[in-house]
Amino acid sequence: MYNLLHIYLGMTLVRAKKHLGQHFLTDKNIAAKIVASLKPEGRYTEVLEVGPGMGILSDFLLEQAALQVFMIDIDTESYLYLQKKYPQLGKKLINADFLEMDFGAYFKGNLGIIGNFPYNISSQILFKILDNRQQVIEVVGMFQKEVAERCSAKPGSKEYGILSVFLQAYYKVEYLFTVKAGVFNPPPKVLSAVIRLTRNEVDTLNCDEKLFWQVVKAGFNQRRKTLRNAVSSLINKEKLTNEPMLDLRAERLSVADFVSLTNKITAAR
Image (tube, rainbow, N blue to C red):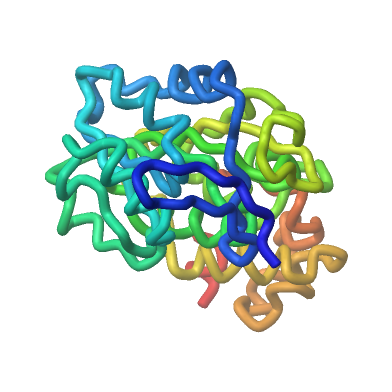
């Protein structure tokens, strides 16, 4: 039933589990390249690896003397394996669900996040990061190539969407490199890619952020319609009859455009 990768340490067996979206990276050169893509530059000293699996990234991560390394894995088999492999981690090795993690309970200040992220929950992981954007200064991660392209897409492209706008509102998003399926066990049926998110200087958007999120979601949920129709439930149609941005589709607007439109909708209420 599972795709199996048999690795023993003592009595512990680690299996790549389909229901957890696990694909273990096996290429050490790529692992080293991913870790080298972290650029703390004094902005953080704590880094969290999500889903370390058998530790191929961890080996290189733990060589970074300036960083305090934490790891979180929901998979108990991986957790037990890593306990024996890295006994020095102690309580910094966490057996829990990243999506349920209380960052404040573990981290004193800013942090970086790194990982070969499970593809079946990649969007949820990114929204968890967005929810904790005040602490998460940098992210370097492996995603399905399609998701990586959506994260880094620019206005006007077919890949540009909700995730693009929300991430780029608070982070500089860089598509770093593509990774072929053959360097994983089991190999995924898709190409993968590594991206880097670097927190920008925007603490809060210069608009009603709750309304901003509503406008972006409504616009892209009906992306074939103009914004005038897609966000009709959010606007005062009589006061915004001459607003040119409403005659465009959501994919044409930059983050700054969405902020401006949100302010205009707020003023017209």
